[in-house]
Length: 294
Image 1 (tube, rainbow, N blue to C red):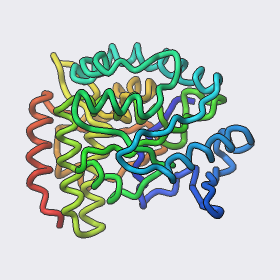
Image 2 (image 1 turned 180 degrees about the horizontal axis):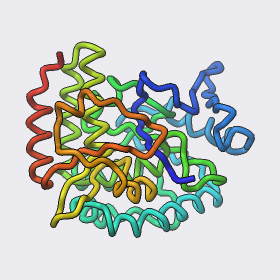
Image 3 (image 1 turned 90 degrees about the vertical axis):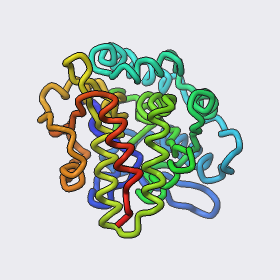
């Protein structure tokens, strides 16, 4: 199974979340659905609890404590890179490739969140902070306005290295962190965060969230006549990148994005393509700056 669409945002319109965090006293407990690949693995579940506890106890602005990863989990990271890196050379936009080289994530083991945050901050000013799992849209998007990306630290179960039912550290680092290393993409994320802070109604927030989905998560653009990916959901999954060729590629319409729902459980059937990086950057920036929040 290849990785399907993931996002750290909790979409209230879906019921696909495979995990939730509850507190038993001061201890964070991650509850996994019975169909989650790691449901029957007690050691994996105990490790997920420890990683969730890091997020629950984290003090913003301080170094992020290291997450406990096993050699099997480092093997998952290597397997993902072996799958996704060749796909990047075919399908990733030039901005991603440039800042991916500068960020230079390790291929052989999972980097710790604090290590990546320091690198990203040097390149663009953005930093990463831990969360235990899915985040409500208002919280997640608004935090971007402060130059902070809320990132999970756990990794998918080793039994399904190319599949995850929830956003994990693969999605966050290979997808989002690499793009946030670009000052231009960091700027767009700040703008959408500021727009979210101005948003007053749930309906308006849902429309804004859809624009985020079809751009920051699943955006594509044309370079030298070819469709290239700049969305984190695409760039963190070889399956999603390969499926781009089967998608309905539509013109870059922010109005249509706002009205088109999406399904997080499948490869994305519709992608909105900008004619160039500059068109995407300027049009999206103007849209977020002019967002009324109503």
